[in-house]
Structures are given as structure tokens and as C-alpha cells.
Length: 76
Image 1: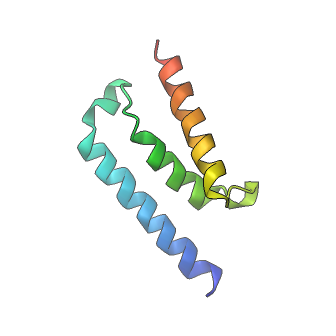
Image 2: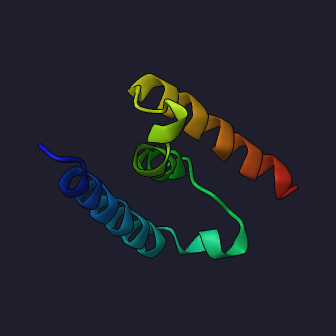
Image 3: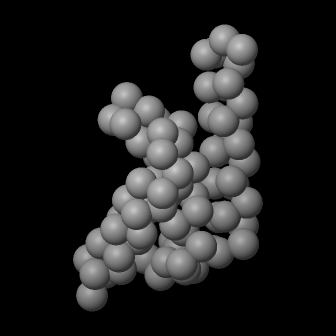
């Protein structure tokens, strides 16, 4: 399997996840973030974080939870 088809596939999944997330949680427009945002972060890190050794699933989960926590702390 070559890199481009894989990257294209996960990029399309990311775009799809973001669109579905925005529809399901419109409150994010008001800086109110549900915990499900961590899954979108995970996918985003999977797509764009390979250059930063983020190809390990457990590390993506840790980082996505940190980002979620940081967003929620900044809104207060």
C-alpha cells in the first residue's frame, strides 16, 4: 500500500468526522465543547501528526485529552 491512498483515506475520514461533529454539537460555536471532541482530535492527530511520532494510538488519545482539557480551561 502506498502512502498517498492511505493519507487520502484518513484525510477524508477526518473531514467527514468534523462535519458530523459540527452538526451533532452546534454548541461548539459558543465555545462549549463536549468530551466527544477528543475523538475528532485523535483523528486530526492521526492525519497530521505522523511526522511527530503520533502513530501510536494510546499517545494520540493522551494528546487529544490534553487538548480538550486545555480548550475547556481557556473558556473560563
